[in-house]
Image 1 (tube, rainbow, N blue to C red):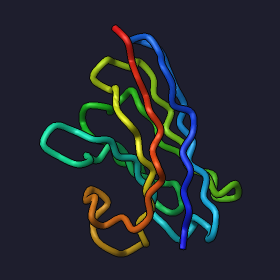
Image 2 (image 1 turned 45 degrees about the vertical axis):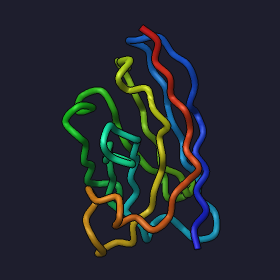
Image 3 (image 1 turned 180 degrees about the horizontal axis):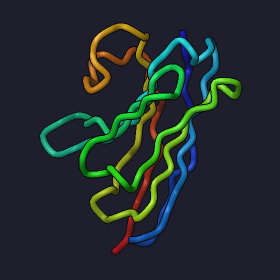
Image 4 (image 1 turned 90 degrees about the vertical axis):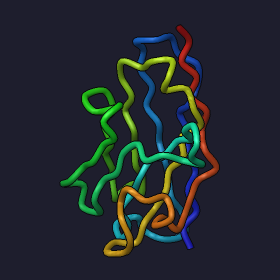
Length: 125
């Protein structure tokens, strides 16, 4: 079992930055691909970003490319999402999730087995 806890959300003006953190307990995150998701119209949650178990490969949805950066520190059992140039449409609850390496698809919500409780990000215009 893996327990994930997100932090770092808050209220920020458009153009500002936030850094989300996700810390795990129970098992080492080095066995998992990690992802960030958020709700979207018509979907329970949409893919935002993912990072390979080693941290050498990262993936982003088009709407956040060039603005968000996902990273991880396996020694600290943590994953991060640096969000810059925030827009009002980025307002959402952001969820951290873990996917066992080699299973399913990094883009697919259903492929992730463990989820955090979410952290609220609100971007004012």
